[in-house]
Length: 370
Image 1 (tube, rainbow, N blue to C red):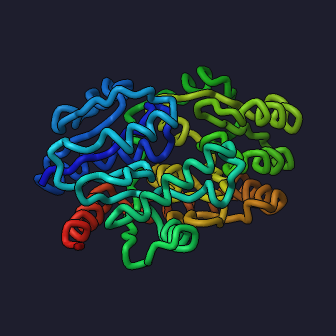
Image 2: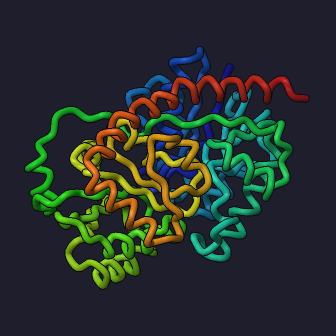
């Protein structure tokens, strides 16, 4: 079967969890099946896709479109995905063409634009809403990455529950090899303080302002640093100003880090914290669990589906409660030991092999539907 993967919205390094989903799904599908896979992507993303270990096992089709123009990508998606000899089209970035010419499946990662429209500008939010509505109606099957996302798709888009398949994701960050903790600390200017790590896009729904407030409240024996990696966004200047006002010198913005450095940060962190108000899945929490990092997480949306009983939860709107959880993670060695043991066991429930199996089942249902 010839399956096309619509990656027209891929901007390398800037597309967040959906990019990781796309890049990890391809090798899992190749391993689990004898599919012939065609990846349709912007020309600017081609080099990074060829460089993937699986880059020469698929057919890469370059679409000439400005990768950073959402409008142009959306227009290309509606007009340039037909005629590639496909039996089925899988749209992996939430939106889809209205007239694909073949049966299609669409992965809808989240409906954050419905819950937190301030994350996107007005026109962008309306455009995304219209395109997602089209995807929901013109796709034979919808893949949701969590039960929470499935519930939102039913609620906000009116899709019947029976047309939605839930396929959880697997870990996103590759396990690294050896690293030198002293060198890493020196490189990032972290000194010898305990490290609280958070990994998330710098967007309003990620709730970093409240995390900074909770962090500033900490009164523990050894003052920690809060490390905030990731690419810049429109929201970062306000976050930096807030961090400087609340905890001068103790909240460190590192910018984008490559996988090996980020893996090292996870491994030397005393704990990981994820304060998001809403998530489609929650890949950073899973990446922390895989490495046995004690996790404090928001109890919102999909996150308890990922963390189960291996995570300490808090209400993301309660900075006092968030601070209490951080204090426990920093000061209770017995608790940290329990969570370090529980994390990898919980993470075993999630794998890209399982994601691929569920995705293939969704393809079969789409092709069987009339």
